[in-house]
Length: 155
Image (cartoon, rainbow, N blue to C red):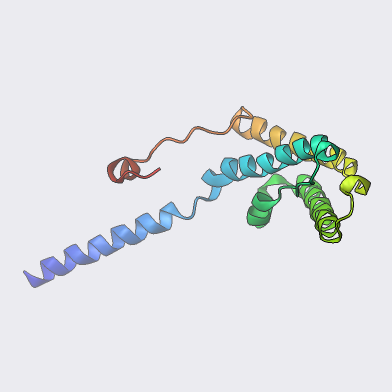
């Protein structure tokens, strides 16, 4: 009887270990979500460039999603990766200029944000092209709850 219980426990441990291992950390399934989040940063930055000189107080450009996922976008290809790196490098430089202008209480009108137009446009086109090629749409993918998510009330 004791060896039977041992087999049950061992098989349960193996099943749990296999489930954990095969499930991974999202991997390929997270790619569309990562692309969509970075694309949201790009779209927001394009809107901020448009309204930058109209605002009384300047607002920093978005780069949080890029900062989180920049090491996870190797699947995009070298050309698009380089475009994104350059674009968000420029965003960081402009954010520093905005921070300095706020600190010194000087006008933000002298900051040239229009130089971001082309890199943002190229980044957006590259990300949307990737989504069209791999998903067939530029819209965010629908999320369906998993079996366990349905049982336990999770996404």
